[in-house]
Length: 116
Length: 114
Image (cartoon, rainbow over all chains, first blue to last red; front, side):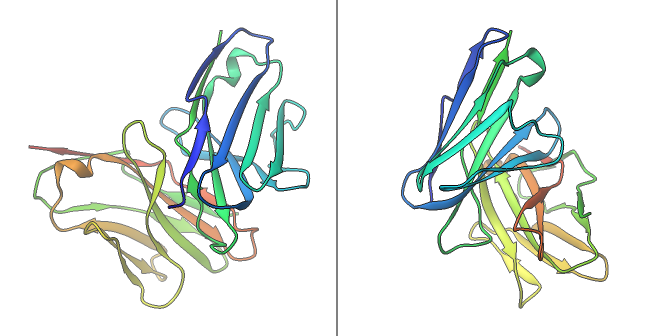
């Protein structure tokens, strides 16, 4: 149980285009989902906390207009990288917290974004 | 602010040998501690966690970690590793009253060799 999927697993796009990444909790409902960014040889950096039905809470230094987050249902959150640039190339990982396990996060497999 | 330090970026070890992956944290308030494992091309999986109670926690595949408050450590150990344990291991902390946000260490690559 507690499976989280991400789509796509890899994406290559041109500079200036927008890319949408989906995060789904497959067998449980998630009131809260988290979006992380992972650089090579670095730890996961929390970008934002996404709560179903409300606006996301962004961490300091993360541009909310560039990284649009929507959490429209209890099983789906999306991250849209708008007007992507090469410096946005990274590994993006989502996690979800179920309704009962307040401290345990279940992670998706990640999405590798390459902006040319 | 809290932080998590994993001093070893890579730990090579022979199969059936013991291993210890070190994790230290800094926080002025109580914490909850986690170890996550990331196998190649897969997402992070929860390995074990300390929330309260016994300071020694175990996973189903033979790993254990001990919460040491005085040394602010949560080192991960296994008495005999297997090839299949090759993975990236992340230590993480949640600070009480911090919105249940995970703060991760930089990870330790465990490479088990024959």
